[in-house]
Length: 80
Image (cartoon, rainbow, N blue to C red; front, side, top):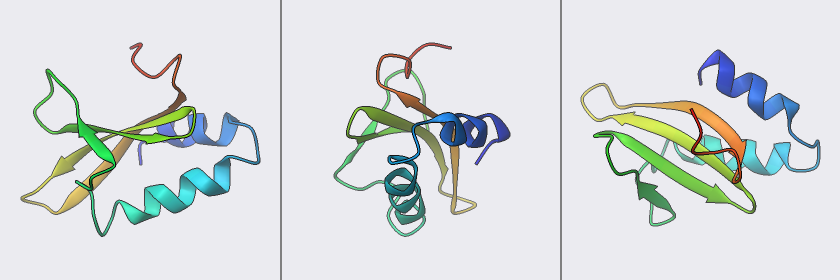
């Protein structure tokens, strides 16, 4: 998880944080699940929808690595 994504996660309302953490941890075993959607215009980027929040992450298949780059409310999720 990037430092900025961790800061975004910790700034969210406290009741949603454990829910998001559980789903983020689950990405380790299944990064390209049915619940994830590949983002257009980015070769390795995906989005995971959790209630009104979005987790944006990349998957490096060669290194078997998932990097969470953003955790935001859906209104904010696709802005730079």
